[in-house]
Image (cartoon, rainbow, N blue to C red):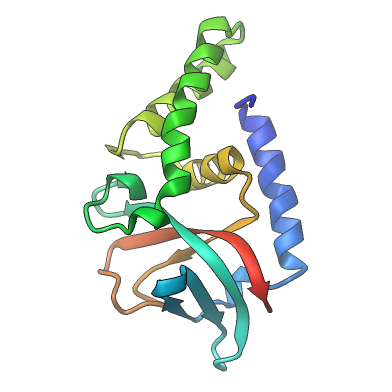
Length: 172
């Protein structure tokens, strides 16, 4: 798998077009987790079901401290919910090989950042958090993600955003 910013952004834009054919993530107002089955249900402001889907946790962004933590590095995470983020950590070896053979300084810088992101369970990150989310989606070939904050899930502390992969949509 070639890790390059242009390819990752293209993957994300295609994913975005595809998901908008099904539902608009901007319309998410609330969520219900069916934890025993790793299923979530997303609802709009009128309590209409947007989608029912299988999910896995990506990680949590604390925008006050600028700390990112992968789901595989969380103590309380259900192991079944962090399988895909563990793949990101495993993929770091492939990124290291690309760094060694890299000839373009700008691509090398991106590769070094992705290597750092994928190897560390939590870290300070002052760039656009979507770079991490797009990378995670690309590495795992995931159709979409959602972000939840205190605005649509009262169990989430203020200042934090939880990110989840939508691994497959059951119905909408």
